[in-house]
View: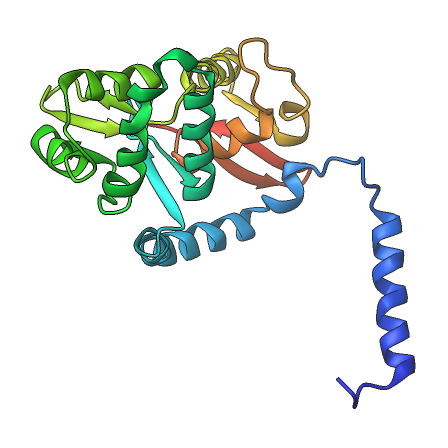
Amino acid sequence: MDNIPESSSKGAKRRREEESAGTGADETPSLENDLTFSDTMVALRIMRAQFPHVQQSLKRDKVLRIFKLNTGQDDHAIMFLNDYLNQIDHVVKKMDNKKQGEHQVFGWFKTHVLDSKLEPGIEHQELHSLLSLGGKVKDSDISLLINAGVLTRQLIDPNMYWFAIPSIGSLLKGLAQGRKEIMSLLNRRKYKEMMLSSLEKKRLRMSPLDMRFHLRDLIGSGQLQTNLTPTGLVVQVSKD
């Protein structure tokens, strides 16, 4: 650092300030700026090659948790573990203070279950055994975890549970409805396509999520595809 000329350092700082001034803090960048055809293909290939390794590393280091979403599709959510633990604490605080003695199961859940079980699901007997490391487990304890939204039963096998994110129901509803609304909009058009710059300006009636979130979701899942044209990027319903 001592060998960097002062004039060079000041020049770099001035360029950064000019770039920051040229991009207003309140401006929302267009999705098209980072979804050019070539950039998209490169990004997807890099993610496909690297994400499984990054995912396992971050899971193993207990930085992230992966959740299976109950959307009827192969959807998953990724959440920082600290955020998830804070969410659990928030749920416990909202419960009846008169029953605080019953809430010790949440401590067992965080300390013994989440700390050792990294997969999205867990079998009933394993759940019971891990919780028992904290104290005597009753059926009502597991029911409390389910009612709090940190566990949900798998529909196919009632002896299996998915780890869940509390109060995620409204978000999942918005995700499903936003997908449906965008696909319906494009399917009604003659060529089932629309300029990305125009589409991202549309306001969704049925979802609280940002349009660009839904577009990335649908493009990433393969339901939509992008094509680069002389007039800009076009979003089109993928052909079967």
